[in-house]
Image (cartoon, rainbow, N blue to C red):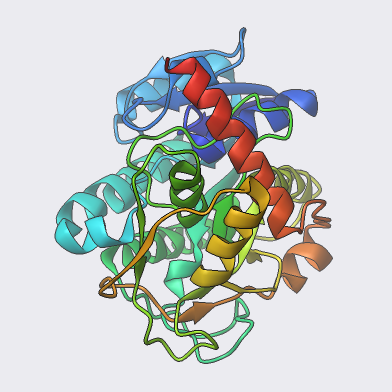
Length: 328
């Protein structure tokens, strides 16, 4: 069966394509390559350049390839950028998702898996946070994703579009075989930034805020290996094909690490002591957010294999070294 992967040339999307191929699926990628790379797409996988909001193009793709499921990654994802450019985020994340959902309904697509985010919870009162906790984003990025979740719920009720919403916590690491990884220049992911600094690609890195109500004053996050996240999507696809009802599920390990702990782990794994500076907190950053992943495990049958921060860091380091050789 053919699966349309939007944003499939990007960080998480390219891992998803590899996972689909390994599972015997037939992926088709739609990507505008604004943050993705054509070389990240394996040979033989169709890559269509375009926007998810281009409805004639998407409708043509659905018909031409007999698309049975859509896995929707394409989005803008930087919280501070969303604060500076909220309308741009609502256009790319919400308006384009609405167009894609409409094409799915009109084209008879049976299953839809949506890439959402822990940012829909905002500054959570409970740790770990469950899917039934209040949804109160602190940034336009979080709101743009929550609006898309709501549209999917309504489309499901009105048109029977079965879907799974996966709320990602902090995605990190790289393919263990180093076939793909986080490659975007100027990326803001903490582990990516720390690894770049350890390898001399940045002169220093900043810690944004040290006065949060956490054990060491820095933000606490739940870090999930990107390959485990790709597996969660495969499990969601199998669940939907088995007749599962529409559902939202967290994707995290249920354990949090502070910014300082992550930096210390990168220093230990890399063997490099690098420069770290303190900076003011950023708008839209909650103090602590950790996932309860019981629903993903119980309902989707998800069994993560790489719940280990040093392993995540080691794979990120390996990929960064490969990128440095590639870019020489």
